[in-house]
Amino acid sequence: MTLPKTLFLAAATLAGSAQADDGGAALATVVERTVIPLMKDHKIPGMAVAVTIDGEHHFFNFGLASKKDGRKVSETTIFEIGSVSKTFTATVGAYAQVQGKLSFNDKASLFLPALKGSSLDEVSLLDLGTYAAGGLPLQFPDDVTDQDAMIQYFRNWRPNFDPGTHRLYSNPSIGLFGYLAAQSLGRPMKGLLEQEIFPAFGLSHTYVTVPESEMGNYAYGYTKKDKPVRVTPGMFDTEAYGVKTSSADLIRFVDAGIDSAALPEPMQRAVALTQTGYYRVKGMTQGLGWEIYPYPANMKVLLAGNSPDMALNPHQVERLDPPQSPQKDVLVNKTGSTGGFGAYVAFVPGKRMGIVMLANKSYPNPERVAAAYSILTAIDQSR
Image (cartoon, rainbow, N blue to C red; front, side, top):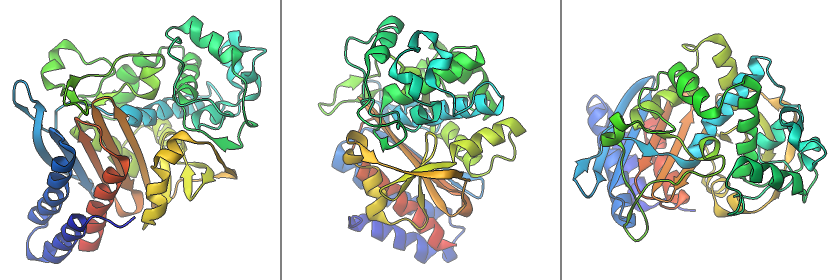
């Protein structure tokens, strides 16, 4: 896929003017020339963009958090991040392994006795966490609305593939991974996230349930028909798509992904486990929550890895044995959407740079990926 002309112009602007000033004005120009046309093309009411370069944060805010009352977007505006939530769930599971509460090789039924005698006896926690359980679907059926129905669903489920052989992106899969990880730690996922994981990363405006005191900062999402909307809770929403956060908080989380040295040692090890490569599929290396590509990235491969085909269809995988330790010259990314929001996060550890893009309208993943990569490339070329 060819990058839009505006993105090439933006990259050229930053690369050409970086030596003429301190870089701040040039960075603002490249972000504005990238984001403003994107918002116009997709009728996005508001966006928050955060960039980290060598640990220094830059914030760029556009448009409205709420069209009804005219609230403007800021770096503390709270957005729904959809499936980017999975990176937090991955961190909980990795932290549980570091604490010795589970092993990724454990079978799923070990932590939920009601699943004994089901197909989950043959599925590892790692298979669940990397969407390789054997064909669990993207979503639960509509009638799975409580724990009893969830257990019955998994008891009746039959795999289409041998565990560990195929990837099929699945909320029930990583949702069960997170649920069982929380079981191993003896606490519900919501409590673990809000009371341990978010504070450990210094996130002060990140929630599963936005408190009343913060509702004024919580953006409204907008549907394709421009109707205001917020996410509806569902089975494993906390684990799969339920986190709400600000660009200021999420860029701190990105910083820890780039360099976790400031975290307690057990959390450093957990971060490393989320960026470990467990298998390759169509040029992408699957981490835990995160998806990983060589850097500089091949745009065709990067876009394919974030395509509907990768989200909706099964693909045979190449297992990495042993798993690939975290790399520096890679691009680590994750997309996320709810009914009214679209998020994208990407960072390059070896270049100590990353980007967060939060919008209060969902728009196509290729547009997010191309925009973010253009900005990162422009930053890299300006050095």
